[in-house]
Image (cartoon, rainbow, N blue to C red):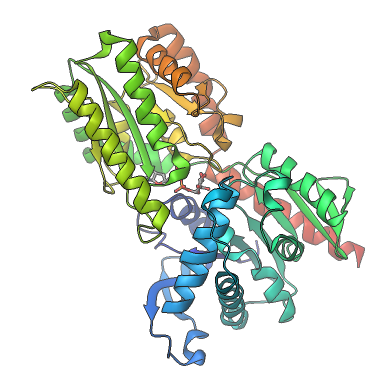
Length: 467
Ligand code: GDG
């Protein structure tokens, strides 16, 4: 099989475990195929740094994988990363036009860094490489590589949602972004809903012709675009769950809460995750169903993320106020309804925490997939499993139909679903869990990477045959 070159904004050592959906998903993919992983080093250097230095990747090996990284200057970081990626594309793609800051210097920085990445990557490429670019930071990368003469197969996977056409059309540079996407051979999306939005968008904005096999013809190129729902590394997570730290966490937590019922939420602290609405629903549940007072306890882990972006600082304050007010109203000397931790906890402890929790709360307002939902399902004891309460606005909801699906904007209905989860009889829990587990195990991260890469390969053969 051809060498796989993965490109993403940040990379993580594939031999170590790290927080963050992309890092967790990409590690096993690269280990399996062996290859190159290119991206930002995480270092920010002075604006006066010589351009030649920025274009020379630093290389190091990690097992089977070569890690190649470049630095960003302070102004590139502020405009490309904090600016266009996280203050424009992230909110718009999560349907939050109200939070987007459309500034032309952000767009300039985004274009500049994508060009620099292409220039730094080009000398590292071999003719028969398969290039797999990840996520919204790097949408124009293939177009930049093509301008430099790159002929290799290039695929792109969007980890976040793709919103409906009229939301995308509000993005000032949407026509340019759309054209850039057609420099790829394959576009992978998380869900069928996202794929349908893409089809609607290219047909209305680019008058694309629809061809068989998920292909679209526009701007003189053919792009295949379809859903490849990402999964988790089932084997790795099972091994983690069986290891001492997870078992100890499960034992200690279960003992400590033996007389209570635990609910758990694990999220990056992000406005897309619906954390205030989740707390409001929990609050309403305690109001309307007093039987759960002095019992139901929500452990909410909110791992710090993008804290220098204003919208993230605001959501943190809002959450802290809500937790304080719920604990103030319902707390007793020996019981607090909400245990809120603003930190990243060790990945080794996560399976134990999930397993000790009767209810997993995954209620984003919008999420590309959501891997926490899948990790929660996998961690349950099949003979006495917990219940997943899942937002219908996650990509995961297309696959995990047997969860209790909720509309997180409907606080009252979510409160009812939480109540139902806390009371669900064993037989129903087992039946739902069996179906969920089957799906999580079948569509794991290896399935995802095999499907994507096989389709990208297929695409290449077709276009060679057509020439
Ligand atoms: C993006 C898309 C898509 C979280 N807190 C801690 C921690 N985590 C781990 C979880 C999980 C991962 O991070 C989060 O993945 P999600 O999928 O839930 O969300 P995003 O980070 O927003 O990821 C998302 C994903 O990319 C993959 O395509 O599913 O829709 O937004 O694995 O367990 N890990 C540790 N401590 C924490 O406190 N160790």
